[in-house]
Amino acid sequence: IDLLVMTSLRLVVAGQIIRRASLVASSSASSSPLATGTSIEDTRNLCQGSLQVPVPFLIGSSQRSRAFQSHRSIHTTCPVAKDGKASSLSATPSSEDRHIVFQALDGENTGVATLMFNRPNAANAMGRTMLSQLQSQIAYLSHHKNDVRCVVLTSATSKVFSAGADLRERSKMSQEEAAEFVSSLRSTFDAMAHLPMPIISAVEGVAVGGGLEIALTSDIIVAGENAKFGLPETSLAIIPGAGGTQRLPRWIGVARAKELIFTARRIDARTAREYGLVQHVVAAGDAQVKALDIARAIAANGPIAIRAAKSSVLQGMDAGTLSDAMEIERKHYQTIIPTEDRLEGLAAFREKRKAEYKGK
Image (spheres, rainbow, N blue to C red):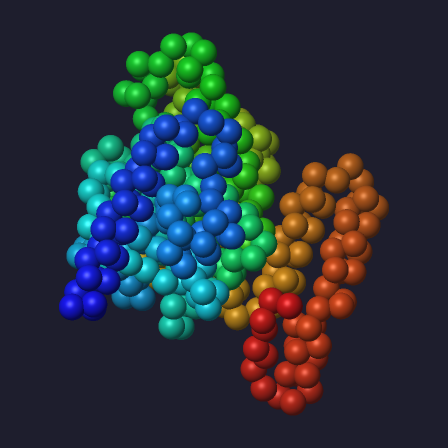
């Protein structure tokens, strides 16, 4: 009887968590980009039974198989449990509420997480709810205590990565609301670009407008051969407003970026690779498979070193001179010297074995 009572209580708790997460996502759409995040300590308390905050971290079924399988079960995940590992409560929230789906992978993919755009009926267009849920995930991933070593951005459908902003929703906004939304979109994408761990975009289908802009926040882009890229904003009498005019020139050069922005032209995956926008082109449907291959290779390396390397590159690219950039590298290298992982790397090399990095 006690077991039945406890099971019933857990199901009730799971339902409360999901409802509260949905309410928070709806009510916080106009707040600052990271205002909806749940702290590690609050999440730990919730996982231990205290319902102080909602859990926005929604995951799908295992993704160790090929990309784009149908998801038969959904879990609401507490990323930090009592033992520091991911734990989950089975639940079945409405699929319409899960615009961003987070999953921390396990097994051979331990250390890798996926963020899946899950609004296929609207071409994964970024509206207020989807943006709010993305902000919550960024807040978690920004926390230095999480165990995620690499993130793969992907889509629930192979037809589209993301078509950008939700123009139907945008058409109902006042000028002030539209300006505020684009500003929030821009700052959210900037926060994504500065996440401490590497981000890989696995692009299948269309990535245009804000869809390309969010892909540009990643460190590596893998594309299925059916992928299309573009910034069509000038054809709508606006300009890219979430980083496109700044990040695209840094990826492919000023002249090519100007041409794509001015003409609103789309390019295919192989042209994108030729331009340097895409690092790998694979068979249609295999982008996530390739992205996970790369993510596993990254996750096997020293996590503190990986984060320091990413930060050093990002800061160095914005430095005024090469001398300033070299000083940035020196400071980041200094943070590595006292780590246990550095000593483990040297010991593993000396003993001719695989290193086991703990992120310490």
